[in-house]
Image 1: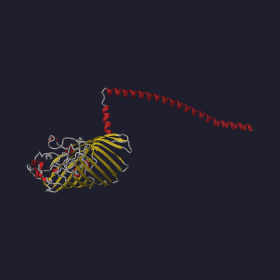
Image 2: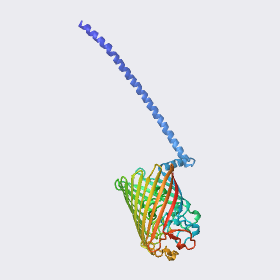
Image 3: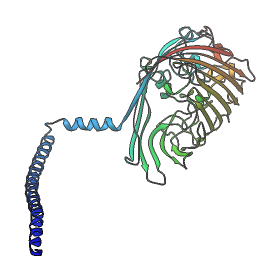
Image 4: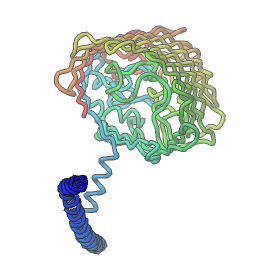
Length: 485
């Protein structure tokens, strides 16, 4: 009986386990077939890749042959694409009209000025600029329509990934005449406003020293001042008197970098204190800056000392009166700029300059100047800017020769010091995307020590040029349209 039960149990166990062994064999067979299929696919993929690599190599070799033969212009297209991808391109155009309420008649006053004095017919140091060429330096031709600036800017910035870079800014218009120092008699007056000015042109390199030191070689924008030569970066249409005392650009080498998150520095050496690529003596100009960046405030202390001093005052307003060929003259400028941007609706800055000059046959001028300006957003499309300035010049005229009797201007023969005040208000309104209309009123007044206060041109007097400066003040009205691209 016991044997029978054993036999029965064995039969039941066999019936239960045998199918399981059969299923295991099926699964193993399926895995084997899948492995074989995968091996076949890998072989096919390898063969396909070999064919693609061979085809690609043949195509590349054919393209090289075509390119060497000069039969394909795709390399030029790809080069242009790479250039455009790396380059930041921008610019703008600004045109204006101004009216001088002193109503100087340029035609009656003549078209040829005495030696050393700018012509009323040109766009440099015209009758709006006063006796020293300081007021409205970029809008000096009275009662005139003009193209202020047509600006093209190209820049390839440096970075840790691409340490080489460059930049170039080219400007046309009346501002280019000022920067080029165009004076009547130097060229064809038909070219006034048509010749370009190379505002910037430099190559740059980000040296892997510390957090990085950028080196710029060529022509670059000055470190000094709060206002910019660019028309689209200033609150007002006209530039201020303080801006007129400062250089615009330099030619040389500039080094710059950071000292932590909030401090930056720059130091450079240039040919001259003025805006030129030529060096007419053996002296060089040193320039430096230390700048602190806060959350809403920036403080910059700038300094410059160099040769070839413009007379009787240095700066952009006197481009044609630069001293040349003197090794012992110099101008020193201590420049402080503070900016404050507490919100998107309000921006403001303060600019203080102390200027000292010395040179062969030149007076030792001491000039102190301060300007304060702000811009307020009134509505989404409309804003208002206000700028106030004061300039004190000691011994400005003394011994300069420019305004003494031998130049035919005895009016200033006994003058020494000058006090110049200026206030400018500008409304701006966005007419359309990138298009802005600006309307401006400007008042300037000057007081001369030792002589009657006759600093600005008024009326008609074509013969007696020494008496054309017969008003102490001047009022200008301007309208400008500016389109940025």
